[in-house]
Figure: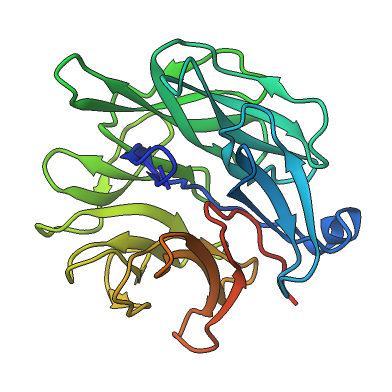
Amino acid sequence: MNNNFKFDHFGCSYLGLVAFSFLFFSKAQASETDSNALIYSSFEGKGREIYSIDTAGKKRTKLASYTLADGYPVVSPDGDKFAFYGKYDGYKTWSIHSANIDGSSVVRLTNDKNVRDAAPSWSPDGQHILFSRNRVRQDGNTHEEIWIMNADGSEQKQIKGLSGGGASFMPDGRIVFHSKTGASEISIANRDGSNIITLTNNDAEDWHPEVSPDGKQVAFMSDRDGNREIYVMDIDGTNERRLTNNELSDWDPVWSPDSSKIAFVSDNVEGLYDIHIINVDGSGLYQVVKNGSQPSGVIEK
């Protein structure tokens, strides 16, 4: 999903995630969107667009087709808005946007040229948006940064103490991200970049961490067993366990509101991407979207 490390398949590049950032509609917001509870992106027609769909996979609504390369939608805590990224300048410039939950009133929040801004994440109070910025150097290598701004796009600043990407807010207001000082490791830090706690320590690449709404667990993707799979661990880094087992890649995990289920994206044999939902104990796997990725929003049924 983006590394801003969410893993971006559309751009065929790593951004300092995630993608991928995933939040959820509440039951109150479900009625406002006709029970369309999952928000995601899909490449159809002329470009990548943003949709919502109920978790039974039956009713779908198009929300945004703003830049023809829109993705990584993430819903605000009050359910009134969503943030997403769009691409400009021949895909060389990626910018964060916000919109009303019905896709109206789109506002471009970041405007720096020739940088890749992606993986937006709302603060628990909805006042700030965290995002990952990826700078492409002349030698083709990239430099990952983590930035924060007010929800209206003002007061944008880099969190200087953090090196990595795929950052998202935790329920307690801290930041979870993948650090980048060698292999990518899952880490936690204060909002100002202080007090960094590293949760994983191995030679594999661990990306796109998402903390459960109850604050007790972290879902993430890792290639430690040969390809990208979804893993879960306790918030202190203990009790790591593999959740998915797929010959193809699984990525971009996102929690349900009660912390009992995880939605994630999986490659398929047709070269596309599907969205699945699974119980956190590994049971109850089912496909909810065919030809979709970058999910952000699951309502409990």
